[in-house]
Image (tube, rainbow, N blue to C red; front, top):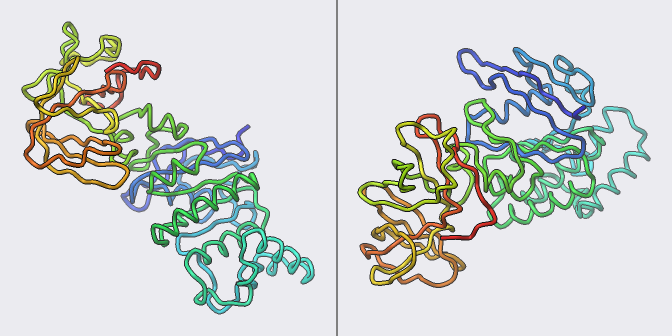
Length: 373
C-alpha cells in the first residue's frame, strides 16, 4: 500500500468547497509538491493530512493506519509553516528541542540530538541566539531542524521559502533538496511557485478549485500537460494558447486570418471536436523568429513585435498575431527587435499541442523524437 493515502476527501467551509472528492497516493520516501494558485485548496489539503482540519467525507491513511479523525500528535508528522512559527522568547536551541522537551526526553539526549542536527544544517553557531537575531534563511533552517528532530513519518512544508528574498530562496531551495534527498523522509511540499515544484519534487500534483488537474513527474507536467490550466500555469513564460480552427483534411490551423501547416499525426480523430475549434498550444522556446525579408522552409505566421525584454541569457519577445498575443523565447542574441517590426514565426511541429476548446483537455499525443519544424 501507499505510505499516505487520501480517499475521496471532501472539505467545505460554509458554502465554499475547498477540497472536492480528492484521492491521492504517495509512496514512502517520495517528495511530492502540491502546486496551484492561491485559494486552490493546497494548504487545506496539507492541514487535513496534518490533522489540523477534519475532512467532511473520505479517509486518510498514513503508514496503513486510518488517521482520518486522529489528532495531530499521534500521526508522527512534522510541519514547517510559511512563517516558521518560531517562539520569539526561546533561543534557537530551545526552539529546536521543544518537541523533545514536551515528550520528556532526557536532557543529555536532547543536547546530543540538537547538536547533531544543528551541525548537519550548519546552524551550530546560532544555538544561543533568538529568532529575531538571525536572518530569514537561518530561521527557515531552524524550523526545518525542529521538524527533523522529531524523526517523523512525513514532513509537511507549507510554502517555507515564500518569505525569503529571491537570492536567498534559490540558496534555500538547493539546501532543502540536498537535505531531503539525504534523509529520505516522505515529504509533501505546498507551493504556488512552479519553479520550486519543478526543481524539488519527484511528482507534482497540480490543483485548481479543490480538484487535482494532473499528477505527474516534473518533466511530464511540463512536456505533457493534461489541459489548458496546467499548460498555462506551468512554465515561465507559460505555454501560448491560441484560439484556432483545425481543418482535418488539409492539416491546417486557421489562426485569425492566417493558416499554419501542422502534422497530420497530431490529429487524434477519436478525441477531435466535430466543430474543429481548439486551443493550439506552443511553448515560447519552440518558436523560431525570422525577419520579414527572410525565406525559410515550411509555413510561418506573420506577426508584429509588441515588446522585447532582454534578460541577459534570454530575450522574451511578445508578438501580436491579429487579435491575439504570443510570447517567444530566444536564447543568446537577437535583442535588436523593435516594437512595430514585422516578423515571421515558425512553430516546431512536434511541439504543437491541441486542446479541446470546450473542455480544455489535451487532444493529441506529443512526439518527443521528432525535431521537425
